[in-house]
Length: 117
Image 1 (cartoon, helix red, strand yellow):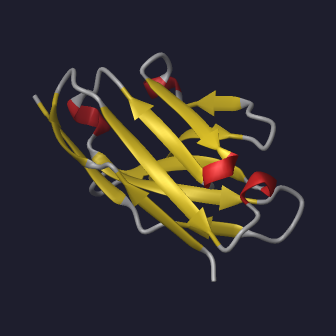
Image 2 (tube, rainbow, N blue to C red; image 1 turned 180 degrees about the vertical axis):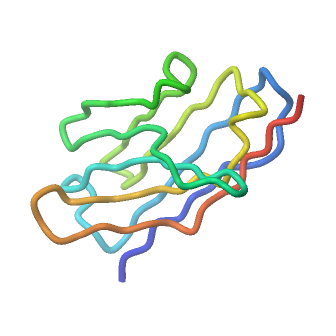
């Protein structure tokens, strides 16, 4: 059974930092591209950052220079370091695992990040 479990969300003031973690089980982690997505109230779910199996990264324009995605294949975990947080970063953050060119696309249940001004 595949599980993606996010942690590290919480409430923080603008300008603060949080580090999200997503622990994966039930998959061969190193075979999967990993991503962080977010969904604010009343809005669609959007990509925040992705990291490929060879550690290439890509970011949404809104978070470039503030967020950093990384992965630890030995611990089956992907991270999202979020700095200089803004109120508009408030959302539920979801972890995603996808196996490019093969079956496999999984989601975590999300972790809430609230940034107050």
